[in-house]
Length: 144
Image (cartoon, helix red, strand yellow):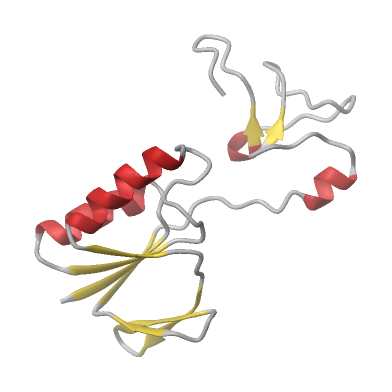
């Protein structure tokens, strides 16, 4: 059996582990250059990637899926590059990706998310943010 896991977030990471535990081959497709880029530094990404690869996970970086192919069951995927990857099972674990260009055009500060204070106010008067898009410093842990 062979699987393709789309998305390298926490759920995708766990899916890799579960598939390998039952002897299923794994191709992991991620958009980033490095695993958990933006969350881990380069050394941290390398540690996680090395562990995944050592345990039989093939990481396909800087790629996106164009199409899941098959009929009644999945036969694999086609990447935007045109490369076809066969699989008996396709697991999707795509995280949040928000295009912020329109927000930047409104002069609202962004980084990995929309920058907010502890009240979720942005730098623009009467504009607030919430949910996965909000980036703020936790007043208890003092971490972003």
